[in-house]
Image (cartoon, rainbow, N blue to C red; front, side, top):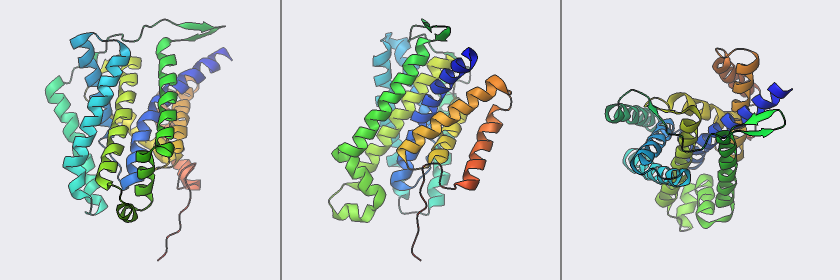
Length: 292
């Protein structure tokens, strides 16, 4: 029982990281129906931003996190402006191919600038375990779970209660009607990319602190699993991304603990296939009827 509870907490920690990264995917898809495959690389760049900030200034964790999220938000807006905005009215396949190209570009840019050797992330969060009875919970795990939940709640509040958040919902429902209502669509999409990229950086920083390494290809597998989480929960639905992230993290952790660490990825992706066979729109997705 103790082992199960320990793995359950570890699953929450991993799932929290996948959930905040998945939010970036689902926000962008919800607004412009684009799967931003460069999101994993923005997560990776966010980790590098944190790494450089720590080495250059030795600032505390919360300052490093803010700097990383702000720089990632700027990077996200830049990518959207230069790569995606000119293709707004192009066929979706063009934007999808561009997203894959941007992913490869950022990955190779990091390889050129930072070199392929992994960098060791300094311990910006003190590793002091907390004991609850027989359970041993690391401070990194606690910070990861708490920060992820806090930012998820803040995002939900932002989308539902603020003026820019309402503009996002309006654009996601009907872009043309939003223009007629006086909403600046370009600015709304830029805000969406900024928030999604900042959350990707949050996931990148938490991931690099948990696994103590930063390297140019670190965003590939977490980004892919976060995408799976977004699809599993219901792509375009914010609570679905959260739920999918926690499910994927829990399944991966429990599989490694009780079945096989080598089969964990196969089981995670197999779970997606099984769910989509019975619920093609994801766990929280709804079937939409289109008039012909």
